[in-house]
Length: 607
Image (tube, rainbow, N blue to C red):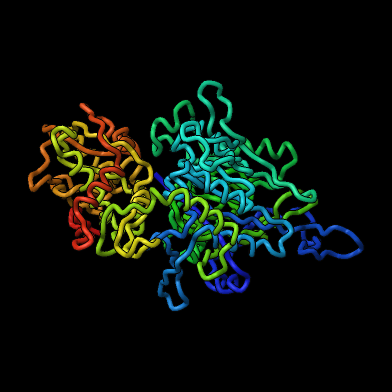
């Protein structure tokens, strides 16, 4: 499962934010004939009443907001910035009150400005948005003047019918309207899903592309989600849909736009990469174009037709501004703005009125931090306050107490303290014979959406875990399953963390207490899980024995590249993951004896 963005800022902050700015990537593509004599577009030109030959279009973009309307708490709300002396500073960032200010400030003095997003605007959202099926986030995005977004995998969490409701409006089919006398209006920007078709008709589910126009300037936007969406979304969410190859789809619609006379094209792709550094201002074009980035987006970028002028990407929650060579060998801008609204990208596209194309040699781009020391946008504050009042009776209920931060999303280690707590909660809740008889529990790391933070988020007091905070950690409310797996299948599942589709970007399952093994990252593929070290309660796993394994319904369906977990038999469906998590917090903590962060000693890692 995956991630999300936010907003705001003030002009005096722009200079400070710009001080640590990311790379300026110069893009080189064939210059249009006669481009050397162009008048330069900043409202200047050569006088005589002629329009200048070129005009600079500002493209503002972000990705993976995941309904984070309020600033994300703890380490998940920080952006890393490398300082001139080489040290790395953590900057608190995000929150739509600030994202709105940031975007509005950036637009000043830019008559040609378009705002686009790279998917996962909703889904896996904190309670403030998730409780209301993400209507608050769509309302906020309308207020941010978002012009267009691609769908991400999380837009499919509740299925195609619910996605259509977010686009078109109307009250929830089960829960109705949340505010008396108010009907949900839907998104006033198009969701693009070029590579998603209906199985029955073969027709696109939503619009494949849109064309942004102003004073004769035309830019086409094509939006796709990753082809592997069905592997990372529950089966119900993608029922009746087919997901197609990203490159083939974008190239097809780029040809169609080109035939219609739209020569300037931006692809919005919900798939991404991993830069060599987690600092947002890292230069991933050093020493050469795209040398500092790896992952699926690199091959996708290399395959997309040169007709496309820039790629806005997402999904991996990373920050990068790189150039990756297109099929003709010319560098082309590829950007991503972290997640949860902590950054936005500002890209300058120089539009040539004669050729109707972007002068790729002039493309510049940088990521900017959505800092929290700028004024809040009052309309976003009002929106948050309004929905918080509706959520308060549920959100503010205490569930338990913690003695310190318990990191989940904010931990980069294979074994995360909060992952251990969640897996232990699932094992404890499902171990009784009448609840499934679980002996071991597995939790997918991508399903842990936040940290448990000791500092109070409201008036509840430090150390108190509220229902809203627990929901933010486990927002999918997946039903739990307990199933029979052989020891051999268990070993296969652990090996699938680092092989097959997960080889390039390992997904390390969080395991319940009693399961131990060694992860040797100096090896490759399945060998990275040292089979002889896998033990349960001190005993080697017996390949022929049957074990009762607890996992959420997503993993039990083989999701996240774990087909072995999908082979379970004698399944028993239990309570939801969130209910088990809250029950564990209640059973293991009091105000006088809060829950401490657990040791992370289940997986021995060799680097």
